[in-house]
Image (tube, rainbow, N blue to C red):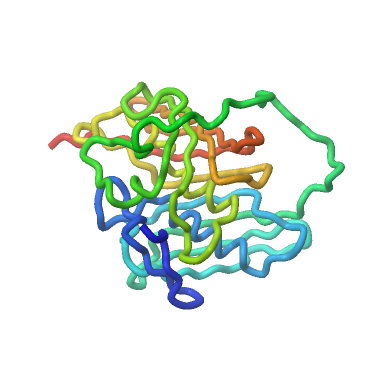
Length: 264
């Protein structure tokens, strides 16, 4: 499948077919754009001893499978923390905007705070089938084919809670090895997908944002997601995800879901 994007020049990226989401071959899954905007923020005026601490993506509308123009700026400078903002536009229209805090790394001898995290996690399970997510009525030749999943528990149609390990099978940008943050963001927006229980022909349940905060940079190609989908009739919904890698839990993801009746 090649990659999700091909860089054309400093600010322009061709969106390749693997970015297409499950509901249309013409609209991107939000995972790759989130990772692309994180990439430009990671690289913008980067300094040794700093790291991204969180990334908040706001989806301004369907992100077309088309060339994206990406711009980045510093909204708040400082020695210990900076607030960055990156925008992806298509045909002159902003399609997604992301903000991230870049902070000074904690000292190596800073006290470890474990909270309620489990001491160990299970290993990545053996493959079951082709490893691709099966979603009713979905476009399968884009993002769904570019990601491999190993389900621990739950899954699509299993009640709205899922634990799964996933990895991207293609680079984010052609010719580049993704960073840990980029790998996490390519997967994190799938919290609503791996927990899908509602029939999309009857009820739409789609996110308008993604907020991921990591206290440690991810390591390795596999990302573990422990996700739960929630909805309150008359109000709205959220999907909560705990993210981990082979070394243990490392952060959280949150999606605000728009819950609507899809029936005519």
